[in-house]
Picture 1: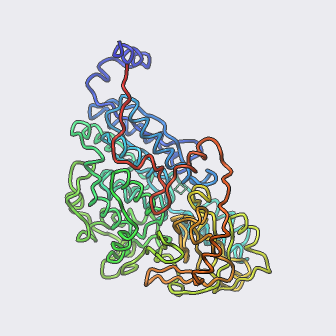
Picture 2: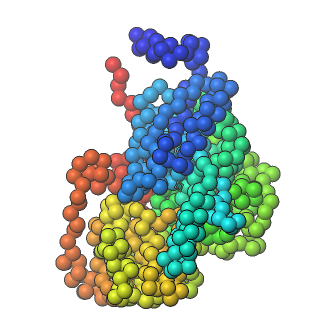
Picture 3: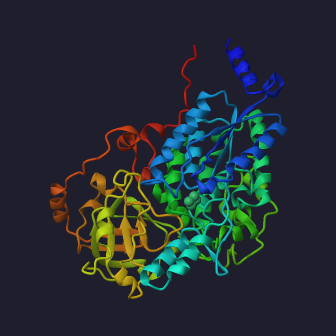
Length: 555
Ligand code: FES
């Protein structure tokens, strides 16, 4: 009777029995939406994926998933990564699906789709949406985010006219695709390839390139084969694969957000990735990708330089080449023949952008559970710095006071933002690149030490200590910092310390009052109750278990 019901409904949609009988059903999980500019081409690309599925003898079904857009979502798209993960898991589990092609790329969609796919553990392949083409202004290349921050700083300093500002606005995003700097989108899709969850070379292809259509078709074809071979995420995502991804993250000068996402992905898979592992790997991996914000070029250049395969071929001795990947071959087999064709974009081992330590993990009295800094994008003058704190209790307080003429701040001050973490934001917004006060900008100051429990856009830069854990909202030491307290950042020794006596800290703690949450219903209430801290990946505590989703009985 149930078979009758399924088949009659297929007939209702115009399919004949022979279209689907005996064929793997491949879900094309598509995060397209009309308000997600990074994914505006994914409907078209889904057609190419379907062609591939049909060619390989499968039956494709395109299924929409929650489209998380970085640009338009308030207060932070990070709030919704776990919702996309649940959407993906429950969609794949509850429908009669045999395998999946996961389509996404805008920052949180990649980890969200993967987290769901890991938990349901059906054969799955990821198809990155691909980066935009280079931006252009007066013949100068413009990079998403990075050049927005750069020229906004100059506009605040009074060195960019309104006419120029408008021209930059028109030129910075000129094709479909995600941010084409080494922001979170480019980082996470590259790491997905390094993990083995895409076809080789998939992550570097610009969205507008015809090769992106070809890659879409091939991903559809491969998804069908993966079902027959029963190649599941649990076969691909070994601990060695995660170490490969961290190694690649360091070599590309990846977004700090990737640390949170990799921790969350690994925990879904049943592995713990403590923050010191990232630091240990960073210490012996050179930064080779000369891409903004750490470097000079953009993802289109990276593709022409040979793309991620070429970069991985440069660090082949640092990778585990035996890891299985989505095409059924090992990483080592996939890297055969890869080579760098533009050495100014993907640097040689002898001439890296940074010899090692592009990202550092800090611990200390201000961050007992850790904090993160992207050293590659910070001013080396500030790597060891002690200065008096200028404290903002939340983002509204910061916006109200940062540009007041009477704010007591100079270039040696340390700007501190509280209540911007996973619960404080909520959703850990990308407020970690605190703006330099206008009065200092006009004096030529362009970087300062900034500390918060927030995240920072992967396209941003500066000496910004992020992800301070535990966050101030739950009473972490960051909550107890006051104006004028001496704060020490010491990147070479991986320390972040508050120079206040312990008895004074104890006195402040006894007077600290936990903020009262404003959200009492819906998804935000669930988020408040169950989200974990930054060093634990900000997943929901009830989703991190390795066990595969269990189907309820069908009667
Ligand atoms: Fe989508 Fe940057 S806004 S990747």
